[in-house]
Length: 319
Image (cartoon, rainbow, N blue to C red; front, top):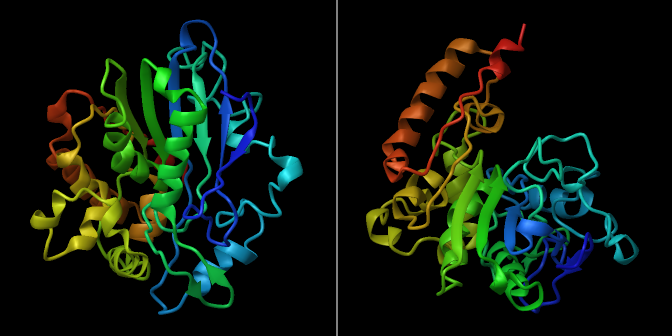
């Protein structure tokens, strides 16, 4: 592993939305963690195409200030390649599974760690070979980005020597963790143990006004050609509604790799971007019950690898 540096992917197919090169950051493991690896897909939003155009994609790639979810240009730059995101800064205030403090992160504090930058606007799933001609040229290459980074980790970052690998991700990155954990597992034929740890990657594919998340999934599926990134075994089961295959609810029954899922039934992204209401407590509880039922109905708990985190503090903190 190259300690702390941003690694740019030079590939003819992998591109951020504005055409810049994808990037990931690494940090080296020590002691008992020297042959263990945490891979994490970054969170973010995806392009909202409900209005029938690509203005939202253009905004993420070229106009949004702070975070730059559609680019590695300007914000990182060649001279700032060592600048890691705040959440992946081991000296920051976050108490999470990137921490180097063994009292905070007893399992992985000394592991090798990889943080993959989300910059494709398509749930890490887009497969558009053609460039979108909007206000600017827009690339939707989420699958190519993910695969290029994973292959680079195998070839240039010694992932092939890992004995234990956890595939993680937050929110949209959690969707990617569900989708790519078997891909990572299939890269190994020996005794390497691979498990998934998607964090808050379960979203109900339903429509609530004005967010209309299900409609957004349909548009992402057809406009960003995500079909080739998804579980092909789902093609028959979901032939009448193939866009549902972008949802963890429909991925989970087909995942062969063990999963440890971190998920709140009161997940703020679900309330903000699907229910579209984070203030009405009766609506929140009704939604959370549907959410928990859908989660359990996937059979995920039958695998014996999964736990559901029920965080009530989100509601109790509200006046």
